[in-house]
Amino acid sequence: MDNLESAVLELLTQHNIRLAAAESCTGGLVTARLTAVPGASPRVMGGVVAYHPDVKVKLLRVSADSIRRHGVVSEQIALEMARGVCQCTGAELGVGVTGLAGPDGDGSGPPVGTVCLALHDARNSCEQAATHHFDGGRQRVRELAADAVLEMVRVYLK
Image: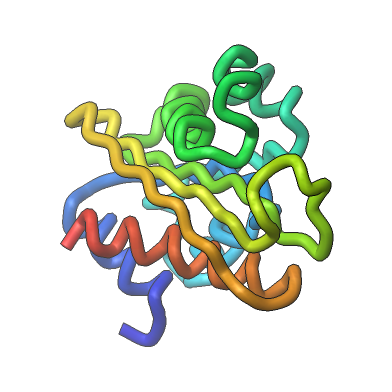
């Protein structure tokens, strides 16, 4: 494989699985990287960039109560995003990513560089979530977050 996204697409093809991504801090970077690979269309259903909490609630059916209780940058919200993107696209596998890429935080939440990601397998009701802390500027955090999401999918399907 040439790169991580090609490896993920090959595994999706082997397992006959379609993927969709719900992205906040990555702003569509995960979906863009996957769809940059020729032949991705049978495996990538689409993506939702849900940057604002209202979009998470309205489009992805994330619970407003969960946002109040856990905060928008949390594994719970990433899981709900992953579930929601499966529901709205029909994909068998959904990923959710939410975080604080910076450059500044408001001091009341997690530190800059905190990213929560999740995977939801609608076929098996199997879920995973993880929290990462990445160093670097805004673009570097976004790139590392996208790498982490793709790696989570690769490891899960391996």
